Image (cartoon, rainbow, N blue to C red; front, side):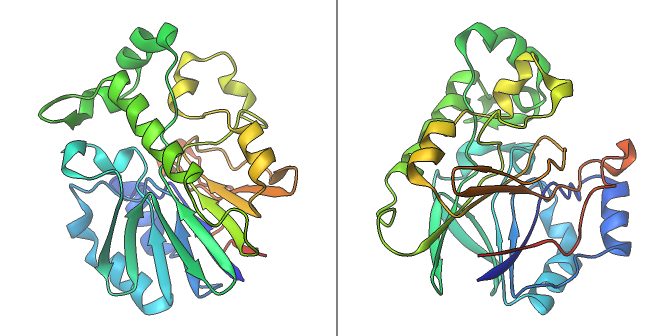
Length: 252
């Protein structure tokens, strides 16, 4: 199994959209994984050319939402688990599993978890709590944590962990503080970017875990036999795109 992966394209920003238009994803595998923060749901209809390009150049594309997808939207409009087709072979999904050949792909935003002691700092400091609504009201850390629990429940309840299929987990949020960017050390906002699943990964041992979110293309590393991989474009205006590979693949 060979698949291609990328995240954090942030097409809602003009410089990012222009960069991706001039430097499109290079087809290097038949399966493309997009690990969140591709474009906000509020603007996705403006990017028909992008969805058409993916449909024409990949056999299947699987896109999980990050946090930014819900900006300027009400997150309660989306169920915890869903699968819909943007194009017949371009799939938007969350808390769903798909089996392809000998590999089981588990797709989940995997919202992180906010510690109670950081609640006030996080709700004041992170845009999620200002621009994502929940049932017509502002998003709260309590609901954020419920989203985390929904994602964790999905992964824990996967029925194929003990069979012979390869397992690949795709999340937007970061699943461990291991190899986390040093410049963010001690920042309370880390609660909204990463959740420590080191022990869980060590026990389950999926073949690979694809993640995004912090805009740092961390060198691949392992937890036991699990390869942790990321390929994030990040904000072009901030120069975060220099380590992005438009044709990055993983071979199992």
